Amino acid sequence: MAGEDEAELPPQALSEPLVELSGLGRTVDGTGYVYQEVACVGKRINQIKAIEAYAHVQKLDLSANLIKDIAPLRGLRYLVKLNLSQNAIVSLKGLESEAEEEEEPPLPHLQHLDLSDNALTALAPLKLQALRTLSLARNQIASCQDFAGHERLEALDLSGNQLQSLAGVAGMPALAKLSVAANQLGSIEGLAEVPALRELDLSANRLQGLDGPWADFPELGSLDLSANELQAIRSLEVLRQLPKLRSLDARGNPCVLEAESVGPPVMAQLLVCHWRLTTVNGAAVADGDLEAARELNVARMLEDRERLKAEQDAAAAAEGGED
Image (cartoon, rainbow, N blue to C red; front, top):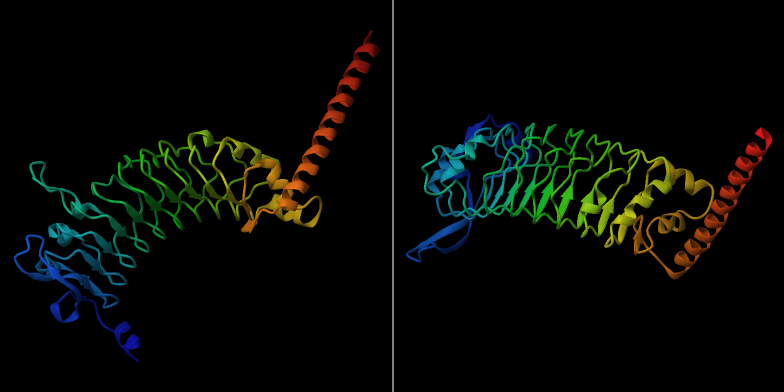
């Protein structure tokens, strides 16, 4: 089979016979025609110097290879979309400017970059000024401490890494979507300066509570907290600081698993934590759910009132006994 034959290939350098070309169109200056899309996927490529011959490429797919050195990509000044997923890249240093006096930085028009399934160990400063989306999923990233932010980045995927802290995940005024799922996070401390954030995926981490700067995310409308270690449903009441939150997923947490076996419906308990939710644990909120939540809220207020009165009476009795 062709797939088996390719798997047995030794590492090889990129060459013209291995390249697939498509998207014939005019050059930027309109003086000729070039192929704007280039692909070489799953060919066990480890050297890509030959890519320099495709100076006008706009979309490049070199995924599922053995690439480590990405410096030859520096000259692709018209590149808009780049897929380098499933390679062996450990650093983005090859894309940095070689000299301060360079008139134009590398890849000045690159907007979409996929570096998932590589071997990066840290989120370093990004000098790709036009970047809009970046996937670093399933690398070995343990730190974002040196990341200096990015003015235009709109979507960032850091899922499936080794993060224990979000320190440094900050300074992204345009960021609307962030995934840090499947890491080792115990809190959201460190996440800052992301005022446009609308979607946040924190699933499959180690959150036991929800302390953090939630008030700093006024636009957040979708939050995934599933498969964490949250111990009390009432800890989710801190999410009332999110005025635009509409979708919440808390499935797979200890407090939710316990609530599913006893007590009022989970939907009602989570709605008491945030009344404006329209989707809870993947299900749309119905009128009946809201009514059940209202009844539960009234019952809880009465219980709290009775408990407070009992505590006050006990305290008064203790004082009387001392007299």
